[in-house]
Length: 220
Image 1 (cartoon, rainbow, N blue to C red):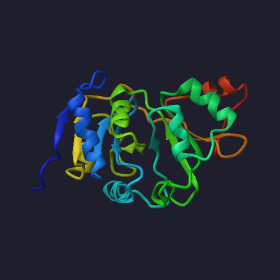
Image 2 (cartoon, rainbow, N blue to C red; image 1 turned 60 degrees about the vertical axis):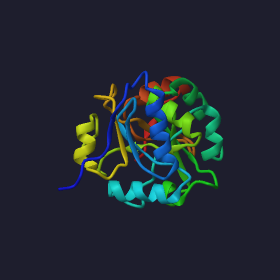
Image 3 (cartoon, rainbow, N blue to C red; image 1 turned 120 degrees about the vertical axis):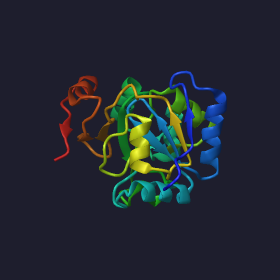
Image 4 (cartoon, rainbow, N blue to C red; image 1 turned 90 degrees about the vertical axis):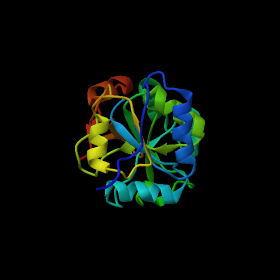
């Protein structure tokens, strides 16, 4: 029988600094941390450690041609991972970040190919989660923001979902109870005009269109 992963309780909105540092320490040494966000439980790894990103792919059984989304902690961090944030995308970021909107942008030169899956693009968002933001601040680097489940599996909204999907493959699991959102982020391709929705999630096409004053279509 496989051993259970280490599970540490955490207050989602008011995390203990010791728990935040525990998670950051695991990430610094190339480990994987599952933690609750504003949407689902996420599987975090240091974005700039290729071996850690490779473990994310392995643990999730994620196809290598599928890009990995990224969490950043503040708007200025966009420059660490993307070539630019077009004006209209900036408008959407100002309106919906922190929050459940992932913007797909042209990837910066330092982003591992395992993250972009050879597309030359990267999906970025700032989560509306104090826990996640404090982990990002403690690590001072972007992290992977993919869901903490097997690829194509049930959306992980509780720690039980994480453990069922990933077993003991995480180095640390933070248990913050059931996530408040429970719906994946909306993913918007901003690499060319017109912007198009890759996945409609917590933010609707109508809400995006209202900000830009134009209809937002789905990627066909």
